[in-house]
Every structure is written in C-alpha cells, then in structure tokens.
Length: 143
Image (cartoon, rainbow, N blue to C red; front, side):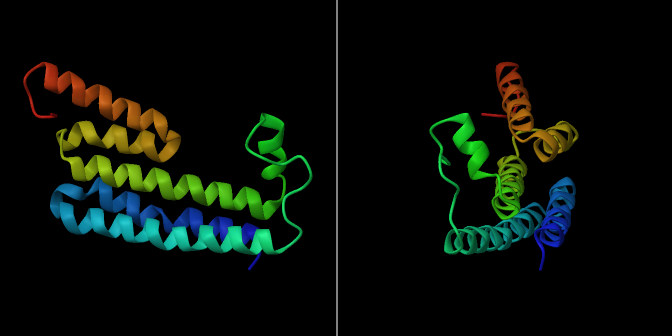
C-alpha cells in the first residue's frame, strides 16, 4: 500500500472514534473504549511505519531531534511524514477520549473541546482545562 493510500486510510479510520466521543453521553464507557481501540490499532500502523522506515536506508544525515533542521530532515521521506501524521492522529484521539472519560464538563461544553482537539490538538486540550478550571472556580463539577 502506498504512503498516500495509508494516509487516506488512517485519516478516515479516526473519524468513527471522534464520532463516538461526540456521542459519549449515550454510552460513555463503550464509546470511549471504541475511540481507544481505534487509537491502539493506529498505534500498530505507526510502529509498522517506524520499523519499515528504519529497516530501509534509515534517516538522512543530520536528521535528529536536537534542531529544527534535524526534525525537518527526519520527516523528509513520505514514510516518515506519514508516521508523524499517524502519531498526531493517535495522540489527539487519545486525548479526546480522556476529555470525554473525565466527565468534568457538560457535554455541550465538551463538544468544542473535542472539535479543537481533533483539529488542533493542544488548543482543544487547553480549552478543556480552562473550562474545567472555570467551572471548578465557580463551584461546579470539574475538580
């Protein structure tokens, strides 16, 4: 399978997990579990991409995590870039599942957090924590 087709497959595979989280109040434990199963399955794809990428020519000279240029070089191959994308998909979905499982916000407040976590990971997580802290300060749930 080509990196482009794996990209499309992985990008589509997370959508049922996000839909499950959006519907979490209907059956929270089961729907959070579904999202996490999808994240774990995609983790398998991530590991496979890493293993096959390392088994080939390996990273180009100068690639590494110590400089911005090193990271750019590390992600310069389509397979490495795809692994990075799957990394984002998995962690954002896992964070979203934690937000839904935590049950510290009413669902109508959770939905924008989930949407932002899906689209811009840390932004949704930040909003979640700000809303949770604001509710706690006002004496509501969220502790």
